[in-house]
Amino acid sequence: MSATESVLKGSDPVLSLMDKRVRDIFKAACTFEIRGTDHNANANTVPQAMRSGIRSKAVIAPGAVQKNIFNDEVAGKATRLGFGIVVEDLVDATYDAFKVIDHCIKVHEEPVFTPILNELKAERE
Image 1 (spheres, rainbow, N blue to C red):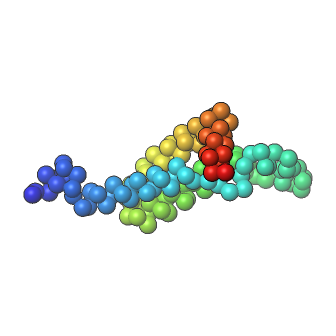
Image 2: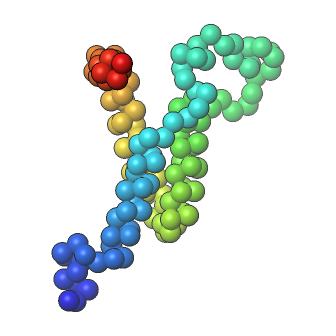
Image 3: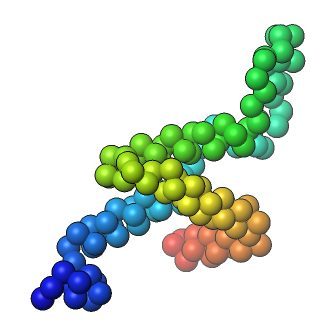
């Protein structure tokens, strides 16, 4: 069987490995969680500038910090898996997927996910 035929049939080992690695990156990106940046947990804390009275020169929005942490994490994983050439495009695509998943969870947590989890908990007991 020629290389072209094996690619078209989905049996090419190199293409299968690349597909698995891309899926691993997207899985890690969509399940990414930044610890300690929950907005509800930080709602009652006083910002550093107000506590110290010293204004920092660069004001970084919490979303920008989250994106930087995400980009560093996913770029490192992508580079380790051999995607160094296309790492920027891969990080952009995975960040978009992360934002969609995160938004869906935030919107549907109370009306959808909480009842499902409560039902599963009740079945276990």
